[in-house]
Image (cartoon, rainbow, N blue to C red):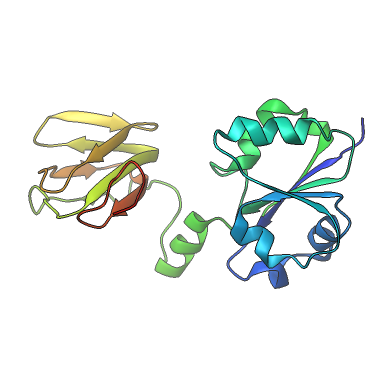
Length: 197
């Protein structure tokens, strides 16, 4: 079967920053799939629109039901960098998909800060100032590398996850070979499970 499912990453500059090929996949789609923000960026040309549902599997099933049609999924940045492209590629054969990424949020942040996106042995990172305590919920996922917590004398590697409530001491830590984390913080008084107050 020829490619029928397109996954188009949208960068911080929106639709205007897309390549002509990416715009063509959006403009000629019979079905557009995405969140309200992404779908709101696209002028209505009569394509069926599907909003992401919870659980995500409901939307994946809806996409599968349209197999063979021109379906375009709108995603943030690079859909294959911990994004929906990974989920879709587990369900649909790669030869049925076209994936057009934009820079990920990780690469944009790193480029603005002048940081490498890879752990680096010559630039170890540390919180050696002592344990940290803050007044917000924090979720941390280790994307690459590892952290060694000096208080616990324990190393947490790629794929490790932590959710810390306000006031919980943690660290200090070191990462002599580098570490890339994804962190989500919720304002004090928020419910970390929903991100709402």
